[in-house]
Image 1 (tube, one colour):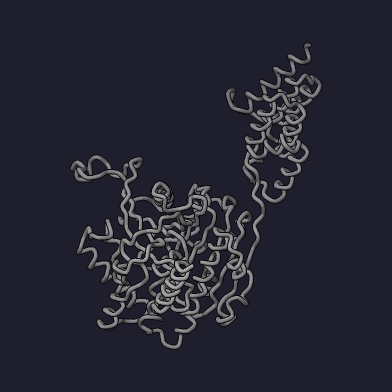
Image 2 (cartoon, one colour; image 1 turned 60 degrees about the vertical axis):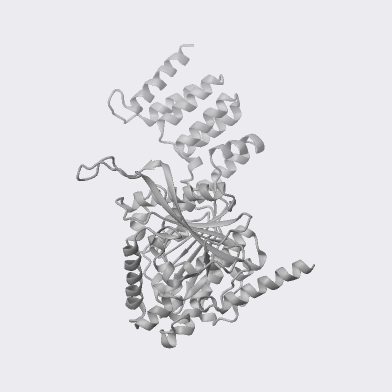
Length: 520
């Protein structure tokens, strides 16, 4: 009992001190101390540099893909570890490992770039203001020892500095937050780069899982601004992902969706996990492709709109938070800007807690604005779009046939034919393959019923009629085989093609079957 009381008091003291940090005032800081580290991973399966460079010189360094992994995690309480500062996060890209800089000149340039960015967004800072900000500590302590247990993982692509407050907040609430970057300019097109970054995240998950840091069954993905795109594809592609969130990523903006949607990994209907889309109302009004949000019909979607009309894109990032809590340079806008940042982060935390931890009180935050009554009601709008149950894949559809019967399976197929006719299991090739599997299992009723459905959905596909004829013949129904073979010829009556074209070969097959069966 004594040890429990001491532990509770330590946690309470930790949370109190964290909430006195200006970056975290009025934010729901969790009970855990936070550690930060940088690890460089090598993917031996991907060679990204040619043996000889543009000038003909042989590459002597490591030619495999190098991925930097920036980690925030629940840590043991140890005040001897130095806290990360705003300036540290400005220059974090220059670290190949946390305790060393691979390029001191790069570190200086990154600091100068971040100061210039702040000046451009929020007004020019004095040297004193910049020094104060750069030296301001956050929660995470460098290379702090991680707690000896597995935590849910939140992963994405690194947006240097911008999500540092958010990442620390999430880690304090019991998440490992991992952001990947190569730290180099990419030569690839955006579509190829997205796929490379998906592979980078998969590499990171493998690394973290092997080291006992994460619970691989509780994985979410998130991102901010231009670094909030790849995780959408990752959630569509990797079946470990259980939740997706983006913050001001302009996914549906003109230009961005035009090339994001061209990725082979993009398919709105392949998003089968809950999705939280956070965006400023004014910026969101220019979305030219927001219909893509509504196409994600198998995702339980939340759309959080931040309504304050003077909200800047970077006000939901660490930069904006610093301008309203450390430096106070935003004038009369400050209260609404601070509240908007807090609302975004409270909903983000509640979303992941609800989905990955099944926390009911967090779900209440998503469901009821009354739980955040300390904020003016006008500052935000949240809408919920319940997702539909996703369609079965081909193997699952066969299982429905075998376990529940062909009539139940066809009822499912007809329902999805209305809701989502492009569902993969309804594709003509898949229906044919499933029928052939049933044929090989000597199930005539199921085989013929499914193939009849296929020809009903695709009545102009002569090859399906021909395969149905062959199945009838295989099961001994001569008249049905003749009837379906004649249907092949009817469908192809006007077709004229090369001798070895697919349809001509189908026609000859049907003709040969008719000749054979009628001669019997």
